[in-house]
Structures are given as structure tokens and as C-alpha cells.
Image (cartoon, rainbow, N blue to C red; front, side, top):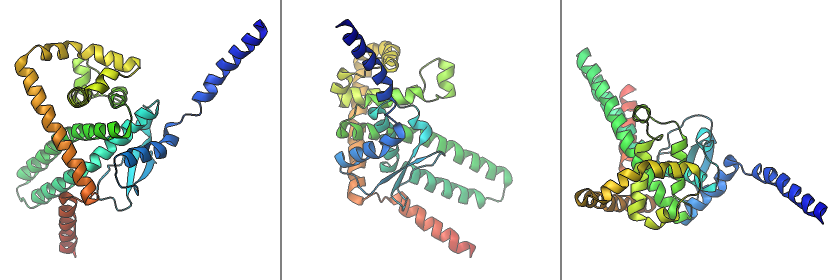
Amino acid sequence: MKKTLLSLLLAGILAVPAFSATWNAVDKVPTVGKQVLTKNSLPSTTKFVVTETEVVNSTSNTNNELYIQKSDLGYTGNDNEVAAVIAKELGIVINANASKKRFVSNVASALAGSITDTNLQNKALIANQISLSNMSEKDQMNADITGIDLMVQAGYNPLAMIVVLGKMPGTAMDAIKSQPSNFKRTMYIYDYLAYNYPSKIQAGYNCQEYRNFLAYIEPTITERNSNKKKLAKFQKTQAKLKKERAKQIAKYKATGGLNGWDASYTILKNLSENAEK
């Protein structure tokens, strides 16, 4: 009897690594991606392409491809976390972040090129880069919470996005303040979930990275909840964000991914090409 139990125990121990080895983030992308698209009634023609290089996703992609960086998938450990990587990229597309950034950049560069004074031209180009950087941070954060809406609708744990971003390299400011990686983004996500999906916060996420994050933000949450003015401002901001995200998703569905920024960029691009002929 003892030999039988020992044999079963050893078989179970040996089976664990074999099972773990079958899970592969790259292999999960098509299945998880399809789930996110289907449950959110998004275009099913979207194809997921895992790439080794950094590619900015844009709604103007004529091949209906969504690029997922393999390096980002390296920070995932389960389907929820793969969904987080996919959802934040879909958030960029739905919010038209890349399209808007590209249009503004081309207009600013064109204006800078028309300035004859070299000093003024350099200042215009620098101002363009700064504005794009600031826009990028805000757009990135809003793309994250659009992704959160998609994850919730698709049945994935949205707290996984906090964990994935926390594993990724952070900013210089994170290091200076000795705070978790990508803290501004993860805190933005947590606040959005706390107001709009409180049940998800209550359900939690069973991993040490998330527990560490909760321990870090606890003093901030406690202080805010005890301050009526701060709490009222928080609630007003989050209610507004939820409406904005719902509006963006509805618009994306209704137009099939078309938006004014892409149209404007196309016109600008055609004018530029015709002028060069």
C-alpha cells in the first residue's frame, strides 16, 4: 500500500512540470485574442501577429492585423495576463491613439519645415516631440483602461494587467521614487476598477506581485477614502472615464475601426505626395 501511494505521489510530482511546459504565451494569443474579440463583438477579421520588433498598432492597418510584441508576452504567466497584453493593444486601436499621434506629428513637422529661421524651426520640432510624449502617456493610460473594459467583458481577470505592467521595466521616475514599475499606469487601472468594477477588486488576484502592489497603495487608498473632498473628486473623475471608454468602444464598433484622424492623415499624406511630384 505504501509503495502504491509513493508511486502515485511521484507520478503527480513528475506530471506538474510536464503540464506547465504545455502552456506557451505565444501559442495562446490566437485563442485568447479571439475570445476578447468575440465577447466584445469586435471585428472577427482581426488577425493577431506576434512580432519580435516594436510595431505601433493603428486603426489604419489595411491588413486588419494587431501586432503583439513577443517581449511583452514574456511577462505573462497565464491566459489572464496574455489577455491583458492583447487588450491594451486593442485599446490603442479603439482609442485611435496611434492615428492621432501620427497626424499631429506630420502636421507639426510640416509647419516646422515652413519656418525659415533655424532656431525657431528647432524649437518647433522640440515642442512637437514634447507634446507627443505627453500625449503618449495620457493616451497609453486611457488605452489601458479601455483594455480593462474589454477584459471584463471577455471574462478575464482585469487585475492581470496591473501585474503584467508591474513586471515590465518602469520609468526613471519610478526608480527615483522607489515605487513599483509603471506605477502611474497601474494606479490608474486600479482606481478605474475600484470605482467601475468593485467586485473585481474584491475578488482579487492570487499572486505575490499583486499582493505587493496592494501593500504599497494601501496608505494612499486609506487617506483618500477618509477625505470627503478627495473621494468626491475621485468618483467624479472615474464616472467620466467610464462614459468616455464606453463611447470610444461603441464608436469603434459602429464605424468598423474608421476614425477622423485616419481620414485626415490620408488627406495630408496624399497632398504631401502630390506636392512632391
